[in-house]
Image (cartoon, rainbow, N blue to C red; front, side, top):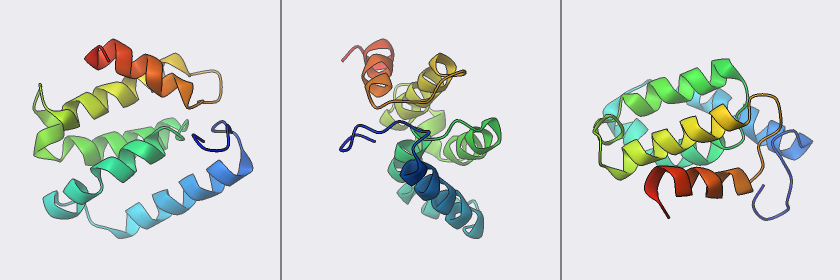
Length: 108
């Protein structure tokens, strides 16, 4: 999305998003694997418009201590994803939505 200017409705993005969600289903939710998957889940979350997939990602992210503790980077990432998802309910997500969400959540 960021490199090629595609939005979340692009076939390449949809394919990778589905592959990641399928892979995520094979990994049991636990602190250690999910801690390492915080950044990949955030990146794939930028391409996720399905409420069911968003719920799965949020559940996994909230299971990581840093993501559930206010004032931490992990919590900021969750808030950024929620901001992006709330702004893009009826349209594809574009990479510039991340910029707006970052500005709103962390002021940068």
